[in-house]
Length: 131
Image 1: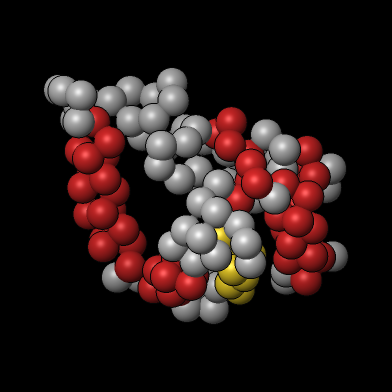
Image 2: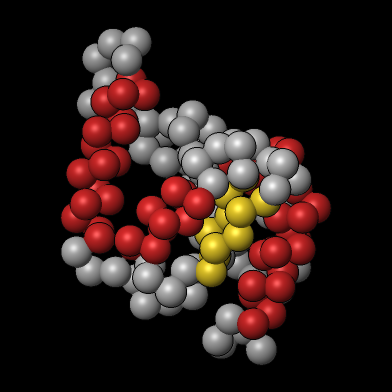
């Protein structure tokens, strides 16, 4: 399982979730380029988050040319991008299983770690090749 954090978080965002799937599956939670302890090759000023956003946007456009055909969960908070995030993920993985958590804000792993862990566990239990 690969856990990708949002902006401006790091792998640490996933600290409550990692132990749950790691009981039965390999888990990778990298710091995305330009965040955490990674190098910031495109950064020359205090506007690094904006530079990284444009770089990431280009990478997403390129990746969307060939959508993922693997199971992908997408979880968002109601008081953040919510359904817009689910729709965005489906541009990259058309069959993504999306859940919007009512009453939740932007930082789902921080605000609802137990519920997120349950969703991930249920997802992995039903994903092909995980029996």
